Length: 371
Length: 125
Image 1: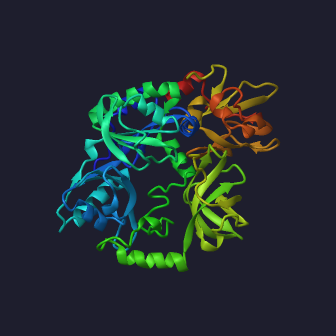
Image 2: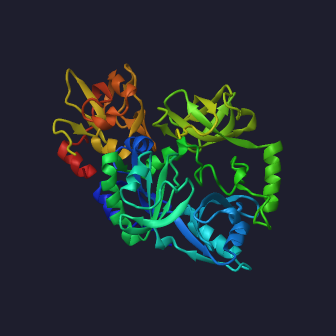
Image 3: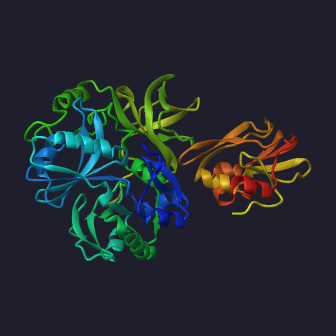
């Protein structure tokens, strides 16, 4: 396997902006341009512009595309309306999470599945393996798209300056084809920041023109380019799981507190159904561990893999942790024994390099925007 | 970025001021601060501690990581910068000035401290 990192269509632009780059799932991506805290705050209060071209697009077409996706994924894709999107997951036969996904319905018989960069090949392989017997086609479209995201409360105003598309009619988790800054784009009202925002799927050769137009249109609104570092703290504050942290093949959607994405009532069988029925029962009667939020009382930052402790015993593990710019305190998501999962549970701490730092157990999310 | 000429530097990216009454002021370089990203927590040595050249004496935590803080010289700590403890972002905004970290009455310094020009060549910045 080649170890040379993959570059997005905006690579030269990022470097000209002075971005600090990082390897992410085999891609060379902007980590931050200047201060990640400033970038985080820009998205919370104004707007930020992201290059997310590492995400993996897979197109599914054909008369039985919906039936196939309902079989291959845990959600009921048949009920997704044209121009709408759905957050869902793909699991193994044993119920273990392969990836979390967004499925966009682009047409009567056309869907786009967006997978995490690190899982795109695995998801593509799984869909390809599962499509047999359905009148549907699975197509690798990873190289067909660049993905830019405008996120933050000012993002509708910025978008209106560069497109005539009906943004007011575009609800959260909807997508429509349109023209943005003169280039054809799939405009989706989705994101991973906890703010209102748009994700724009465009041909890679149009990415730079779109980026520059959004930068210009956004400047009066305080939009700045944002890297993956602030994307991580934004999604963490919003209580959104990240694959490889809160979600792994060792966990079912029910273990991750996301059982609502599994639709047993849908028509027909689906991969993982039997195992997930058992997992749902277990989560109800005897949950092993639960995903909770932790807020530090001190200033030391919990990191993924740190032990959660109580009464001198390990009772859980941190899956994501960072200093929260919005709360002004370190926060974490962690899986803890069910007995310690209730908000306000006393005596819970995190082992930060040998010191037990006190933490408050809270319900997720840490941050919810005012609508 | 430019590394002040009057300072000397370690290969762990600390800077060291000229001695005043035998005491040197110590911080991390702008290069190091940029590499860390936004510093959110600083654990500094305490007044009276003895620090040893090349050994860890605290830690600096940023959004993405935690890094050990090394002392470039051996001696007794005479001051720690409470302003940085209260507002760690000073390390990013003024690494060579208000973001200084601690002061040491120097008992011994290693022979391999770098000049500004040598450090600039070493760090590539």
